[in-house]
Length: 269
Image (cartoon, rainbow, N blue to C red; front, side, top):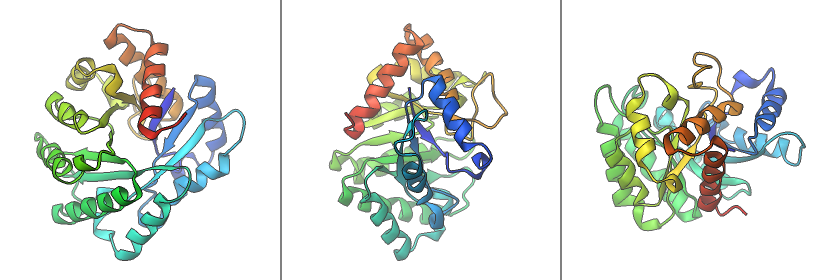
């Protein structure tokens, strides 16, 4: 299995990070994409540092990294931050720029700041020929951020041919299909197992298997039956099992196919 989105540099793992990674390996997770947003731009390098610290170690998954500024911290974008991002995207082992995008639910940064940060980071990612990892959360009861995100991607990213990942997907099937038409994969997290998440499961069931990834978004959104606990990459197995159930295949086949999708996107042998 590949956990396509986890925040394993989180301080919530500081007491047992080795054991957490060993549990992931024992559960069948062989690769983790460590999302490099840190606690803000000052620490977005920590995911890469972690990948390097565990490189070559037996009994733990292979770790790749990303780098980016989350829309919550869009107000902190500066030329120095963008220069740091550009440098990180040139480093070996950094597969993508992200997570970046739009969040209209909390709006820790206002919408204009978010759109500016989104655009500037896409420019750098395009120059470095890196896919992008998209965070999108609309305001309550709305699809506004999804509508805006897909519009921005159509106008400013589709032409690059680089694609990316819509992580922790909660949009509609229409949004998913628009994104896959631009070369994106749709990643489903532990919230897809929640009782009230039938609309997410409906999209998962409708999408072609070759367009799907699985993730934990650890330490957030622990899947059933672990809901409410600190999430960890080992529990991506619950998302693989759900995907297999919806597609009428084994969890192992769902895990292998989504791993193939990940490797294809990033050109990993």
